[in-house]
Length: 206
Image (cartoon, rainbow, N blue to C red):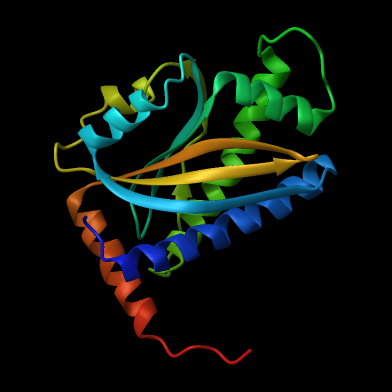
């Protein structure tokens, strides 16, 4: 394990704050009650992350990915099983059409939904370091395994992957996905230092 149990709990708390903001934004955007939570967070080596994705047995994956820079630099991606992604868009848009293909409108909906979620997660984490964060344009794709755009980039062998399970609650349906945050060793060390500083702060009175 690359983080202590207390550090992981703190990181999960920070990520849940971010997805909470994202859920509020999605509620306003689509007018549909949405809950979004992250019940589990792990830190894995890159090869472990690849193995984990294979274990999902998702034949086809819908992903939204982007790069970010600022006090924290790296890449982040939201992965959903294709069928779950189609169902999520149908619930968000109210379109229960029988055609399972993600057309331009559905792809755009997924891209915007993923962008909101990923911005919320990375923004919440970067707040630990107190600085302005910049995001690339989100990129939507459908494939298997980890996003090929990330795989094609020169990611160092020592990269660490923060894997956060995302659970969407929409109209009495629950859809699960995975958030992958890719950080190199130096950025991971910066994040751990920021988590330690946060844990040292006195608790705020209720």
